Image 1: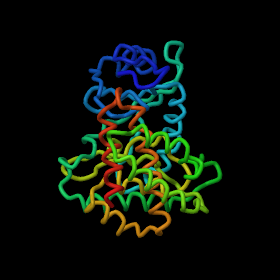
Image 2: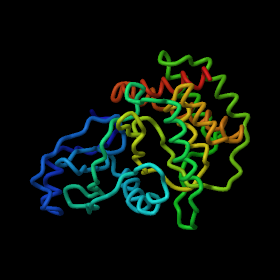
Image 3: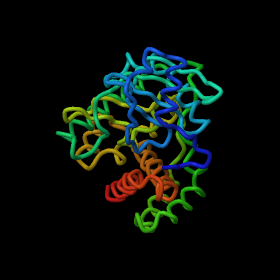
Image 4: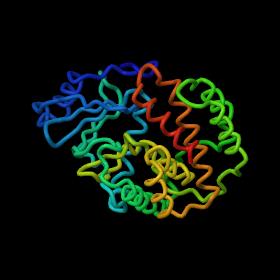
Length: 291
């Protein structure tokens, strides 16, 4: 399904040609497209132990390059598994963008049906967030995250209005008004993942096994990672997540505002092309309005 104007055409035949040209030892392995709610990369399983990721849009190649640059630095500092590149592909005339081969990580996207203990999952993800936020930020770490909430006002109000009937738009607008009363984050910038949504958390044997998709990682407002409280968890997981993190009230409420902004933009944009992602976004808003 085409989700974006200008989206690249990517199929298994292209993947095999790229492999044959750059990594011929892997070109004979089976290639299977992996169903995903992701909106940034096409994902293919390569044999039993590898995967291939290719950006869906030209500018998404920058996100993949960022991940390839910084994950080797972050991985040993984090308590959960993160993607590990096996090889970085180079642009070609046929596909003039960065692409990569990764080690395959077993697991399925976070879902209530596959988690054994939601409270334990909340505490485990909190440990990951703490470790990431405590990682030293060097001068060359790229900026990450979103603009201050006040600068997102017009786009958010428009998206909330366009998110009817999936959400209670009046309640959502009241929640957004409250978010705008918060002061902007004063700093300092911290390492953040910036996209801790359910599709980016892999569950294996009932527990969170890995965090994926670091294309937006960098230094920014740590509230962006607290979005998981509503985007990932229900009440039990959210309570355990907050209990372990002990965030300042303003940080937690700013995160609620960012969660509303992000989810509201998803609904009208992906309503036709990625309905499963829309269901998750509507669930996020339902959670934050009920909390």
